[in-house]
Image (cartoon, rainbow, N blue to C red; front, top):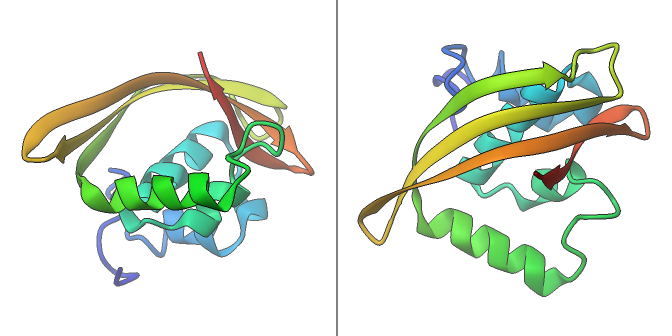
Length: 133
């Protein structure tokens, strides 16, 4: 992705000004919502390394096969857009937060959506995805 293109997460900023910051250094992620947006963008880019890094160590996919399957799926769909519904806590000073979102995509030519409330916590000083509620 060209760093001057609009970020896929829907922030209306360039990738470089938005999720590119998180993808460059996860320690620069300030909020749970910012991490969730950066994970959505990582899915659109099939950036498995970042998806793994931004996933809580206790709940992340453990096997190479699981991680490959996630990337294979991310590449197989056409990502359309992200809609953030609400964020609860998850600010820079918090240690946990919840973000509800809808990730729109087409799979095999059919519209689809992931509607999820996700929990995020700080691990090793930075935000990580924990689980879906």
